[in-house]
Image 1 (cartoon, helix red, strand yellow):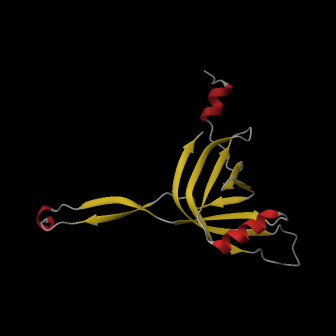
Image 2 (tube, helix red, strand yellow):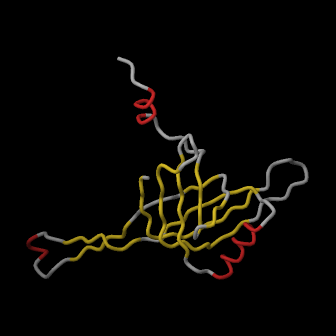
Length: 149
């Protein structure tokens, strides 16, 4: 039995090329975002009789800062200034990376509670090529949550 178009659309994986990034509500243009990871530190506690009982207690409560790498074509306008100012100020900002469907509307988002840029890398300048100039910004992020829309 053949599936309807709607059933096929729901069962088919989303394409990763259609995404948006916003930082504190400012829409940013990136060609690649990688390294989104949700990870927690764990602490193991042992009590005085744990050598006899073999019991240890683990807690998973410490959210780790993890790096996210964002790459984009170098453009004119306010975005390069926004990144440079953010790097100078070193303040924590909220961020959202949304995977969009075929209509361009977000269908799944990764919300980041706090992000701070730690590295901004300028493109390599080579006179013998005609490649696009790509800026790379590395962000340390914490508080990643996945939201379906």
